[in-house]
Each structure stands twice: as C-alpha cells, then as structure tokens.
Image (tube, rainbow, N blue to C red; front, top):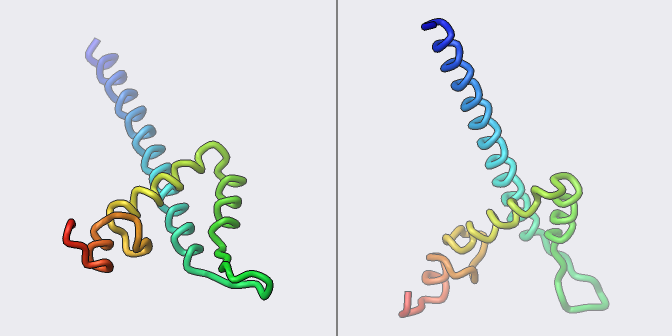
Length: 107
C-alpha cells in the first residue's frame, strides 16, 4: 500500500516538473520574440520616394506569426508590457523612462 502511494506521488511530481518545464519554455520563447521585436524596431531605412522611415519590425512580426502561429500574441504582449514597464527601447511607452526623457512633472 505504501509503495503504491509513493509511486503515485512520484507520478504527480513528474507531471508538475513537465508542466513547469513547458511553462518556462513558453515564457522564454515569448521573451525572445519580444527581444527580436525590440531589436528589429531599431533598424530603420528610408526610401527615396517617401519621408516615412521603415523598420524591420513588421517583417519580424510576420516571421513570429509564421513560426509561432497562435502563440505569437504572447511575444507582442510581452513587448508591449515591457514598454509600459519602462524598458529603455520605447521612449514614448508611458513607463518610467518617459519621465526621464520628457521631464514631465506628472510622473
């Protein structure tokens, strides 16, 4: 009886370990995608017929959508959340970095 109970406890632990490993890998993938979006937003180029600069962020988003499929929204959400929390890649995101760049009295 005790051996059966120990076997069930060990099975439960294995299940928890697998779920934790899966969760950590999903978080890592989302953060990697957010990092790729942030990096690709820095690469800009302009075309001679338009004054609007283009970034590689749109292409990176398409690559994320094609590779991650229905999980790509997690990378975009992580990118937006990091910007709102004040990550230095987005000056106008509303995080703490906005206060330093704009020197707003309301922050």
